[in-house]
Length: 210
Image 1 (cartoon, rainbow, N blue to C red):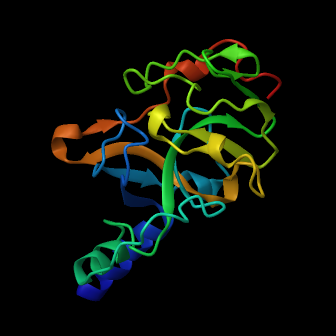
Image 2: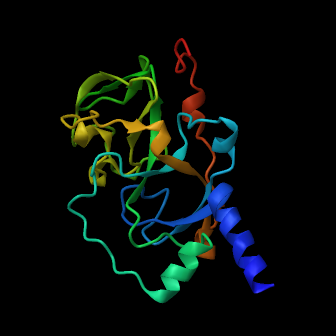
C-alpha cells in the first residue's frame, strides 16, 4: 500500500500538480517569500501554453540564477520533493508573471507604463511604490515565437527579462522551459488565495493580431 501511494504521489507530481516554494521577494505583494504555491502541470500536457497574466514557474532559461547559492538537500526535502510537496534543492526554477507572448511587442520606458502591442497596462498587482519600468528600462522589444517576456510584480526587486537582454536568448523564456502555472497560494493558510489572471490582460486591443 505504501508503494502504491508513493507511485500515485509521484504520478501526480509528474503529470498534474506540484508545489513550489517562493524563494525571493520579486513577486511581492502577490507572493511572499516562503509562500508555497501549487503549480498546474495538467493543462500543458494537452497543448495549452502560458497566457499573458499567468504567474508561471519555469526552469532557469540561461543561468539567470548563476550567482545564487545552491541550498543543501536534506532527507525530509528529498522525500517531499519526490511526491511534489517541495522542490528539490538542486532545481533552479523561477517564478514571474507573463507579460507578453510570442509575436507581441513590449515597450518598457522610464516613467511610463509598460505597453504591450501599444496598449498601456494598468497593473494593480504591482508592489506598492514599485514603478513599471524605471529600474531598468529597455525600450521596445518584440517577443519571438515560442518565447515569453516575464516580469516580477515587485519591479524594483526583480531581475527578470529586462536584465538579460544582452544574453544568448535575449531575456526571453522559452515556452518549453515552463513547468506550469501557479494557481493557488496553499501555504501558509493565512495567505491562502487563488491566482487568477488579472483583468489587466483583458484590455481592448492588447491581444493585437493574435
